[in-house]
Length: 189
Image 1 (cartoon, one colour):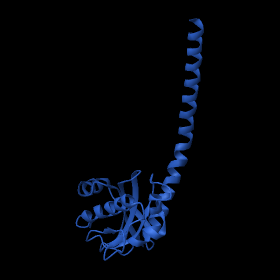
Image 2 (image 1 turned 90 degrees about the horizontal axis):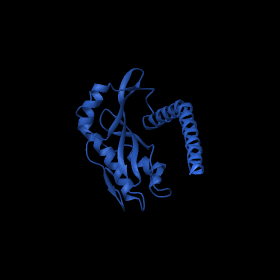
Image 3 (image 1 turned 180 degrees about the horizontal axis):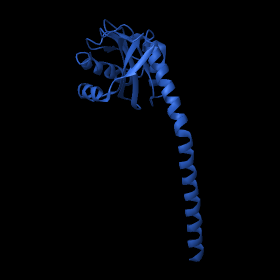
Image 4 (image 1 turned 60 degrees about the horizontal axis):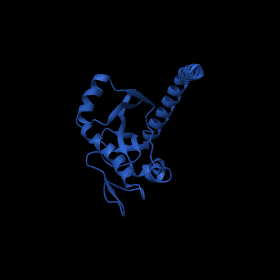
């Protein structure tokens, strides 16, 4: 019995030390991870709205109001050049095959998409993660948010994109996230 208690105490000590080391590692790396994430977000914003030289986060009150119209919206920035608003960059969270996908969309004041990138995701390698390839995301540039964008498996028509082969759920998820932004067009000034 004493041997079992001794082993239990040793196991408890190892567990406590391991938990402490993990917590310390998390505390030490969290700022670097957050900084890296912020840099990646800025790079994505610059890629989806190339003409902008500054991105200004929309105020929290306005963002909450817009989220009531577009629940998948997580962040919204005004894209500016020399202090003049040219459009917006939105980050939306949409449900893909592997879980939540982050989609970053730039669009001008007329609702035309200036660019799209897929950020953080858990889509299947070689299939759904092809949403991060230029062959897929470049299809969105120039499409309009004023009408729903469609997904076509064979030949895309007007305001449609070609689905990723064997990853229609991912294609539909990206399009759904983008189409959710159309509700914002009337509420943006």
